[in-house]
Image (cartoon, rainbow, N blue to C red):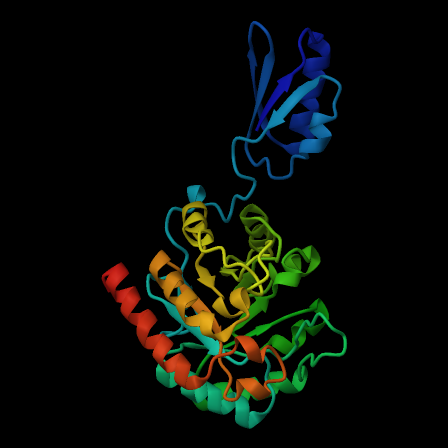
Length: 337
């Protein structure tokens, strides 16, 4: 961080200001005295430095960060890619394309077990399914909750697929003991108390980008989790809100290479929520594979027209079979696997 001081400041005021910085933020301050201004360079962990507070001080002309505020998520401090591994087959970030598939909502034992068997046969290595569902309308189906988690466990027992499901509240965390990957949805991306708590959990966290959040805000949310000690974070681009109304959201496909440049964390794409339209899932999935995503999370339902949640964006098991084959071919071509 660089702080430019106003001209002609008294030496004692400058000295007092520097002492405050080192005491309050535990940083090292290098001072450059030029012809027209004095510049202070803050070295060390400046993530906790309050830009607005510093800028409001009477002797300060301007404040500029020269280093990203996220440290643990930053590729500069961790050149090698992070690989999240649940078991020998369920891996995200090793250069392959992980497939996470299943229904938006767990509706019954028959439904979740049959879909789990089909997606595994097609190549999926993780089973997704919502037990607790955040819905825009309070009258919409909001999941089977604890019962849904039990049904997911049954599907896992039958197929061996690790479970990926969404956590909405800290209060529900004890119920997630047997969940393999905890998903944090777009609405909770900046639920900082929840993120702090997940920093103390020894499980991978799949963190979805918020509807209107920037890439840096997504990385700062990941930083909350990592700052607590849990560095098993998977980032998910699931579309952002734009002026376009044809699709549910607009998939920011450029987020994948940008994130891959900025962070060592694995990045996956959710083409289902990005589009909200089932026939768009495949082309968006192919684009994600081509641009270097580490995985896909896709909604698959055995009977989308009668789904209790998000049927319009769900594909059938047969469609998933074809999608898995095509994205596999793209991955091999692009990455030389």
